[in-house]
Length: 239
Length: 91
Image 1 (cartoon, each protein chain N blue to C red):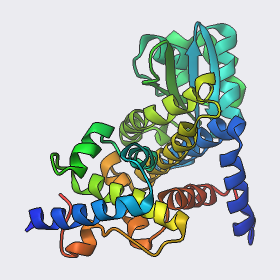
Image 2 (spheres, rainbow over the protein chains, first blue to last red):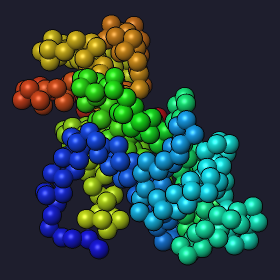
Image 3 (cartoon, each protein chain N blue to C red):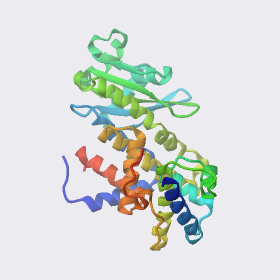
Image 4 (cartoon, chains in turn purple, green):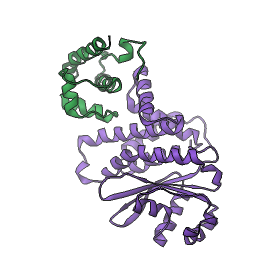
């Protein structure tokens, strides 16, 4: 549940996280996934992003630890809906895991989690890298048509954040001035993704809303983006 | 007219650039950082009035230089499209 009266402290924490390059990728993607987890009409679903490079899948971010555990069961058995979405670059939507014969093995693996519906959507992540956005729900009703459509649009919108985030690990960017700009850019993109999920609008409209609010308020875009991300965390009861 | 509004914003931007102490490349990098999607050549062409940009992109260029003025503590601002024509609706 939310803690009260720590706004300024949290603002500082966010700034610190932003400046800490090692934690930056995870921080950014985690916030985006937290926004995504609330896109359905019902209970928040579990969301994660899997990236595979040279045959090694890895969960780079998740909205909750449970989502990462569900991903890792797939890596352990070498198969599953998110690995299929990622490797075949196609959407996989399992409405009721109990009735899906194709996924019997994986269904048994995760039966104790209570997850019944899974949606995995590929995310464009640049050459040599494959990625997928995964959603897990206990109630199949939480993954209706609208939710699936929203997740597909969302997966498209987070492609650039993910690619930027992955580029931070390249040594060529260490210490370069460009690094600071890329970080602000990723922050702005993350806020835009959050606005898309929150206001159920397209990317250009979401970006326009963010921009105008910064122009009108006479504040830096980064500051407005941080505010949007902080509000998203608060809405999820994280603060 | 929209053309005149664009010209006013561009004119002020060009006047502000030396004051901001930024090269076109540095301005572009800041503009890119806050979400701008036009390339450096396009921004350069825009500054020379050889290329037009959509409203939001123009405002982002203005905002990039305004953020620089905030950093410098200077009370100078390049206007946004809405300041020049408050009734204007983005298409």
